[in-house]
Image (cartoon, rainbow, N blue to C red):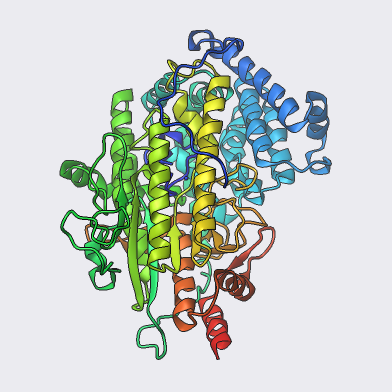
Length: 626
């Protein structure tokens, strides 16, 4: 998926985030056939007709406890002991265990055990390995305290005031998004069209048994949120972080550097003066340079399946652009926790209009299409800023958008083979034309594939079959990405970490979890130099961070819009790497990575990593050339 927006396994922002989410050695390529229905003897899961009310909560509880025991060696007895004194528990909780604990917290709220729900959130906040999760679980905690308190407003005020100011905004979005029971019902209907699993059942539990009461008491929530917002405003503006930037315009001795944006499409006409041109190719429908590609003048484009056009930018129908482009900035404002902005309020009005499942489905698809239209161009604008020496090649892999191509289904083996062929062609192009830096603000997760496959019950009738096929798809993509990194050792690949607030190694995020000398994985910080609420992380793989919240850049219409995500942080670092190579072309990818890390500004605890510092990094790069 391209990392435009989060697609967490069961985000409480599900109805919002599904709209803009989408879905990338040494393994062999699967045979190019369409998968056949899986025969299995696994026990049959209950039907949705069987799962409602107390039975749904009990199913989620049983399945979650079983998963905690089998996957994390956490017994019900151990958990009960930890919940007696959460801060004293001798345990470090990985992200997947945290997800399951939040499932249990939802069960506790739905079952009226509010004290247990509060203890679970306290345990996560004290013992989560991912320190961004120290601020998670606020929705279920608010609802547990509100339901159990004599004065609900007072309980909500206490809960929201426990959050740092930087985390307050993102914790309020859900109360802005969901404003009617019809919205929750529409989302629940979508969930129930999937195969029953712990994943889908726990999400259904939230929409069926927790969200409706939140909506019923929404005015109370909004009143408290307004009061606390006023308190924050009275404290004055926060001090913003001073990001270091360097403009190489007019820089003596700076040389041309070839770069590429690998994405779901980039508008070449906006960067005409800086486009890389393959002089061996002519626009004549012939493979002039004999590399197996036709008219690959400014890069390569690939579509698969029913989408056969080969444009460097994806263009939805004009009526879709006209209707949905105005909501692009608002979606990203909501993702960054800026629910009160004018753009965000426009999106909220749009979502209020989607009270039927079909309307929600159409909105998901159209917003996804607009996101794909804008994404790569926005990334390219960031990557080229202050770098007139850059010559831009465009690699468009339409399958990387995934939500549009693989809506409610997984890729076939034929399509996986087409992906592999496209990546092999890109690797050849990179080496043939000596592309020095490639930005790839995209990534693939196993659970996203599984979520899509659950819509295909004719092929994958139970969770075992879903997981088996998801394993195949994910292994194929991991092998494909390892191939390109190994095939292009002289090229630096800058990868977005992803926007699901998870550990890239624990979740085996491809390609962000890979360790190669020519790969940098980048996380996002906000305007204040703090980890963005959505950023993926890992102390070993995500060591470099950059500005990724409200980053201004171009979209294909020529407008400049501020968008958010690790997709925007990554090209900031790719831009720096290209500038370093412009002032010192002799640097290797490993040397560029090392300099960026060594010269970065240390992020204050409890977070980790360094924020790229352009001035120091470019100075160090130039110094090594002397």
